[in-house]
Image (cartoon, rainbow, N blue to C red):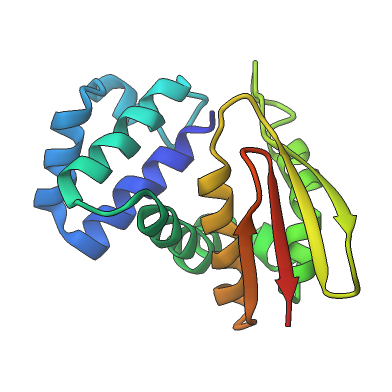
Length: 174
């Protein structure tokens, strides 16, 4: 997993909940300081993110859904525009960004050894309803739901994002 995901989580906690809270999360997670330093630069073990995310839930008392929504909004509205503006600027609306993420993941991880980005398949159920199949062995569909909701907030569009199963989501635009 790209370490930038974990770095974003910790930056979000610092900004939204305070540096004391993020220090408690790091301590509770057991993630080593060496791995924390590498986070923004390379691929890290999936377990590092999962440990940090689990510790975030424990320390903050946030539900999984609330934490995923907070993370998704922070990634889309703060972190990605700051560090990945070249990606964000390619899109002018939520629909195009959501439909473009499979290609973006493939392009951004092409040079990362052993990268296994999630992939997405799309089926239009109606003019406004999109069914997304999340393809990843990581099982982070709840994070995807939060990110999709965050895309709506980024573009100030009303999206309804609902998890259907551990690999399917519906997104209703407008």
